Image (tube, rainbow, N blue to C red; front, side, top):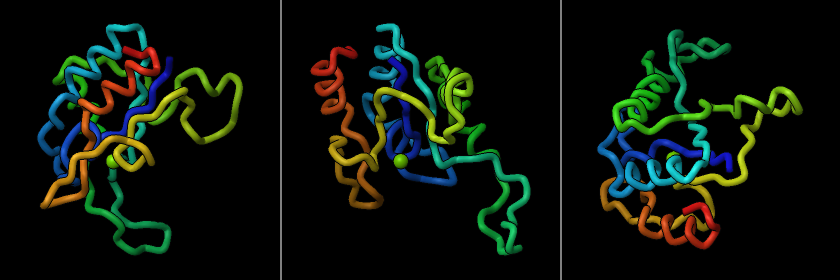
Length: 139
Ligand SMILES: [Mg+2]
């Protein structure tokens, strides 16, 4: 199964533009997903910003390697990625810009188990996600 995985609030705590500490249970669960033969596709709003100006010349974001830093988190934690922002095979059968996957784990997804954070937005409750993944036969 191809699984889309969000980054901020899902893999790490909400500290954008920094990479926050790993959300408890994220690394272990993502490794277990891959060990069970599934593909992880990083699907995040992060991008590498070289020119901070938008087409209207307003500064939208400070320059920074935001997406590269997220990818590095997967490298550092030895979690293989099948794709980054896109399913690597979908160009053969669709022109849609939406990344294709059968499942998405995202703190902003309705129904995703969350843990409240008094200092930031809630983050993913990986114990709850593991239960859902077992119900779906992923784990
Ligand atoms: Mg998020």
